[in-house]
Length: 167
Image (cartoon, rainbow, N blue to C red):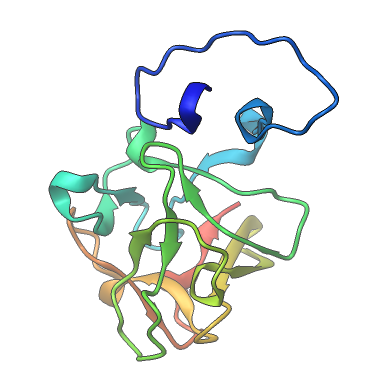
């Protein structure tokens, strides 16, 4: 992409490839299989990432399967970043190790506060996964397991049933 621009609506142009590595000619391929909604197993709500107009907050809403609710992460690894497809930002605990810290979106930088370990299990024969933050060791969860739209997504010590998401 000309000038390494990333803003929406930038036109793609073709260039002749040569023997040099040009950052604007490198691409990351994301398969649709790696994209999914994070539907909480207890509340049945989906994790939603607000855009810049909402200060990039992360909360829960009824599942609608649109970009603010779609996240990309590979299913075949144990530790990964979780990237929102609408904002291209990573879920992060904002550098916090505090119980109850609100999960936010941040520019992806590979920091441990953006790395999540995927743990797999089953609940009532339903495959589920939970995400353990690399910095705090706490789980991604819905505040108090509340079902209301707008309930904040936060980190909490692992163990509660609102920490499991449908696989």
